[in-house]
Amino acid sequence: MPMSRWLACAATPTSGVRHRITMLSSVRHFALSRGYSVCLLWGVTSHVSFCRFEELLSPIPGVKVINISPEQLDGLTRCLRANKSFWLGNKSFQSFVPDVVPPGNLFCWDLRASGALADLVPGRPVPIPAKPAAMIRCQADNYARSHGLESRLGIRIRVEEHLSRGRKPHRIKKELDDVLKSVLKIPWYTRVFLATDSEYVQQILASHFLDIRFLPKNFDLQESTGRYVHRQDKEAMFTFLKEVDCLCRCKKIINIGRFLNDHCVRHKWMPEPYSEAAHMHLVHPSQGPKSGVRR
Image 1: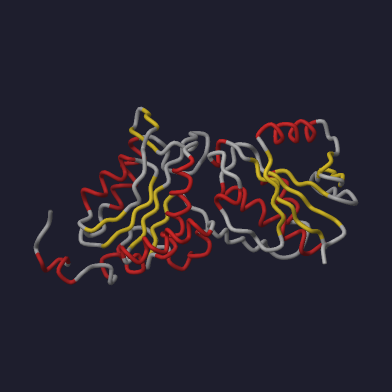
Image 2: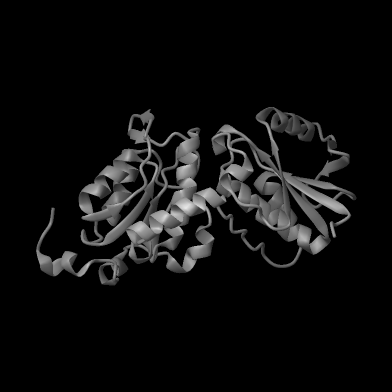
């Protein structure tokens, strides 16, 4: 039976998939404790490559999703700035501000408000595992079987485009080289699956590892430090979701820059200096250090 009250949420237009699911996890934590039904307003914006929710992800149990256009999201933002209530279908919603929970249907805006909302109830939010859409999972299944991902080391290197954000590496050559310096200490014979949005990173690691796999993609965004995946490329977004599914299947994972659902495979994370890679069964016997062969 549906709850009598609804809690709706939306993220900023510039938020990516992981950002939105993090917000939703906090909102759902509060909703379950206080007896609300949950509705996610999914902005079909450039930062999710103008993809609708169902193009990228499978339904999330207990969450109703409504796709809204960038213009509708802008209108919602103006309502919030004016501290006005707004209507969704035949229901009126009032915005949550820290420590003030209005009666009736409630609206929560982005990470700061959702975090404050979650803090009002006991416990910590349980992160929601965002399952890719069925077609993407099917493609990942086929790729994983073909390339033996369950016996490979997954390497995720996400390069941050905004200098104001603390997450490294940024699109600065020194930061990229510092990351690569540590990864290049991993033996060349290690079997690797790589997921990165930097052509430079991919080229350097492809020249180091004898047996490396990565999904084909276009690096069509040119910057002074090299070429990167364009965030507004719809095919690139589908590839990213496929990469996420593939990464989670790897035996161990080096996680630089984070990725969607990485909390589900935290037990697989390999910390720096990555010395563990040299002692794992991630190589074919003929490719080990005794063979004395390097390309």
